[in-house]
Length: 376
Image (cartoon, rainbow, N blue to C red; front, side, top):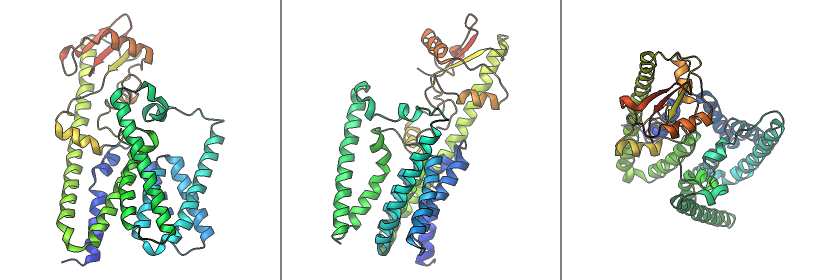
């Protein structure tokens, strides 16, 4: 009963909002405001690029907006790349304008970013967490055989993607048809983070924008094709909604599990007269409760990078501070042990059964440490 315009707008809204990747970002609130601002800057910059203002104004304005998003989170560069492909695919009559504005503004943004990064490096000591966690190209000799095969697959995909990008540029310059190539490039842009880092791991949470952009591009194709694909796209929307709400349910259960674990730790501490202040609390492994089963494993595909649903699943278990932050929020003030002490105690008590076994906790008086064995 809706007109085609309203129907299309509704589908776009549903795909953007009822998307498990988007929900994962909304659940992970540690940087939500900054990332929302970054997304707003990207979308505003894209809109400015397509406006009727002077070209120089559009390049400078979009460049500043893109640069600000880069400075919030570097991974926005992949989101912007997908947005450029999306605009190229959808706004056929503005392709020359997009090329004249968006690409130069991207370069301006990169220059501003690197200059800001260089100047800030004199005052700030940058963390190497990103390279240690995601980067694989610089440590290929250290990888296992399966990881090397994954890196090789990514390398071959990157070469094929680059080859396809070159062909698309050549055909565009020759004024030939490129719609199918653009759609393939848009879908393939989901893997740009993995191509850059040589890693098959899920990308950081900013990538929800890339997923939604690609999803919308495919949806746009379906709408243009007419009624022939409407049932397929309605099925995709229902599928997306199912995973969104099931992820919401999983997040709520995981939060309850975090609270139960915290209370169990405190119960053990009270029973053994362990004082909080001055006592080292060591978590060995990651909390696995509520994360079993094929459905949960399949959902993990949609939970990008650091966006885990439990505070006891974040980051390498022997260096993560998030469990201690959660304990602090709950009003419990244990001492954060050094990485060396964590590693030594984890090795010393690796024979302990995993939580939720009653024997998964142990009080080491000599080290003044309470150890909790979560997993191997």
